[in-house]
Image (cartoon, rainbow, N blue to C red; front, side, top):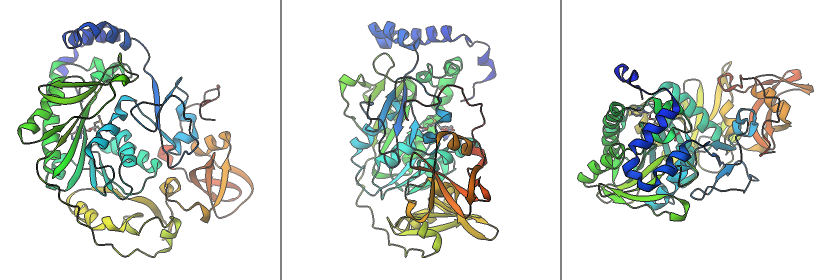
Length: 466
Ligand code: SAM
């Protein structure tokens, strides 16, 4: 969050002074552990990824993150940018502690139901891609980001992840607040003062000030009020931040408890280093870098009073029979939604809900990007190449080697003896992009904004995934 100008002058610019100030602030809260905390802050953060099980079936099994089925630690930080698997959505680079939302979703008891879920503060998409995997395949996830630039990154990451039944929206929380009682599950991963990210981003601490905490508190209170409104009675709210301030965590949840909310303790394995705490009487899980291999993270789960009832079975819409839908495997009763020059595919049973949302707020991606209009007709959407439901049997497949894949990701064409029609480029069997035949080369359809622009390092880019 932005910091008022008058604070800037007082801020320690030197990371060491910033760390010392944070250690000082947490001295009483951590007691005898404070020394270990300070030492941990002065070491490199661990590197972790979360695997996309729908795409990368032979992913490394080693060094699992204990609280996340598909979380893995890596021994070192590879040149991720030059790994085509990252661009193909085979994994997401994610801080390990934040994968803890998996435990909250399980504790909510909603993972096996066809629910309507909302990630209200979703960019860049770490938790949305995770949440989508944790929910029932028939559930619909609405992934929202209010900031336009960050929303583009969210869209890129969700399209690359490639899961069905994801709606990307760009609305202020107030818009959702008006949709009273609509969602069964709401995740608020709130903007916060970011203490817990200091190892990853030294600027996070340079920005810290009591007035920043106050500013964040105001935003969090407002966002939570809207999240609470759009939550169905009996529904669950997951609240998380990457800061240890009680004012940004338990104090915010306490206001909802005063409004009738019931805090649900999230079971955790104390051997993993996660701390189950109860500040202000609010059960939370807290992560500290000296106790586990991860950064700062605080998580609570809350149930809204009332009976959720049974989710009404939505009338099934007849499946659209257009030829474009044949590009998808017939895994569900697909329906198309046309928006400008793009065509999207969604599970027909959610069409009514999507229409309700479209009337109230800006929906930027209603489902799988299926087709884009080119010279008056539909051609496969660049995002479709990355969709988990793409029917691979219908396309000519060209499996690229590492150099070719990197050329493609840089926006270059791929040389060929004879190239006609459309082909699907894969890397290690995982789809990446459409190629358009142009005689003696394949022209590239990798979206220009996603291209790799930095210089390629001379060392082998990714040793752990090859
Ligand atoms: N959940 C994301 C993830 O796991 O990748 C990280 C979310 S980040 C901690 C908080 C997000 O809240 C940011 O993307 C920010 O743009 C958004 N945000 C900031 N102010 C907001 C507000 N007043 N209402 C809603 N969202 C806001």
